[in-house]
Amino acid sequence: MNIKKDIFPKNFLFGTATSAYQIEGAANEDGRKPSIWDDFCHQPNRIIDGSSGDIACDHYHRYQEDLDLIKTTNLDAYRFSISWPRVISNRSGKINQAGLDFYQRLTDGLLERNIAPYVTLYHWDLPSYWEEKGGWLNRDTAKAFQEYAVIMAEKLGDRIPHWITHNEMWCASFLSYEIGVMAPGTHDMAKALQAAHNIMLSHGLAIEALRETRSDIKLGIAPNYLPSYPSSDSEEDKRAAHTFDGYFNRWFLDPLKGRGYPQDMVEIFGDMMPEIQSGDMEKMALPLDFIGVNYYNSNWYRHDENGGLFKLKKEQPQGLWLTQDRDVYAKGLYDALMRFHSEYGFDNIYITENGAAFEEQVVVEQGIKRVHDEGRIRFFKEHFVEAAKAIEDGVDLKGFFLWSLMDNFEWPGGYTIRYGMNYVDFETQERIAKDSALWLKDFLDS
Ligand code: IFM
Image 1: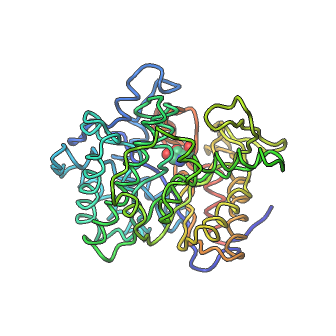
Image 2 (image 1 turned 60 degrees about the vertical axis):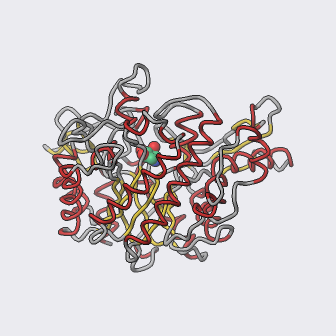
């Protein structure tokens, strides 16, 4: 398939995304405090290769070189996250100037290269000093997040126009507290629901305070969205898919649109429902300037009487092609965008993450190191086509951020799963542009 950039509107923004813990390293430098991910990684059997983000891509020291990679790929924008425990030293909100300076330098480096910064305030690295007090199970953490958000906007809001409160709230709550494969790693649905509530509350509190702090910055959030299709046309399977959708998607999207928690799910969760105080749901529904969608894959469900709380079983159709850790269904991106547009009425939509991982080898050809990642090029093309179709069909899609700039610490997958368009040799920290980065550079130039 051959595609050209002109399938997108003229001012359409192309970017790439990363997150602090996955790339920065320098875990113990310049006054950074530990986060729940430092603690989690240093527990046995949490991370497949026993690794951590202690060094990661050493981006803290090599950020200039990394910003050059963004520039040479002809990308317009870069979405990065701020490490809360790097910039705030304790529960009283003491600023760590050295940590803050890093984000000042990073932002300046982007602006010097004419790359638009998009910042995420929370990509899962909660300071351990808050975890000691219950972490996201404690409402005080939501208040603390609001204070941290305000400090960041005061310090960086003059140079960063787009602010995202949270990345993938489902992961920060259910994947972390119910399924337990992410920090802090518990297996308790009631805790997951309480964490999800406090995270969404913290979003609302931050939006409220950020509006007062700077009226000129644009505010949004980046949920992960997983289309959930029925395995057959039967009413039972449709209900199963709808229930999974309630758990993964509607649980977050409905409150953002002022619809409260979805009633069908409230009934299923019963006495596991979180503590909700008066005014909480109104805060979650404060208007946003833009919304992100993180899309990777889709799931299919059928009804199963023995299928746990939700009575369902995942059943993927034949014929999906595979990446290292997911199956691919590009049309799911189109469906996601159409739903954000039609059912939820969102405008100013960005794809804040989309990408694929493959097992990759460096080869040397005529003295040049190359990584032939045809799978990633195919993935990019298929998803670009679906995004362009959604725009044609009326979706107000403003930009597309590819995950990720470079291979990095892929959470429980450690360094075994490579999502980068640039290869990282984690022994030497050498970066090698993969064929996908070279393809993208030409595509953006086309
Ligand atoms: O690496 C992650 C990222 O941190 C959040 N979204 C999904 C990516 C790939 O799994």
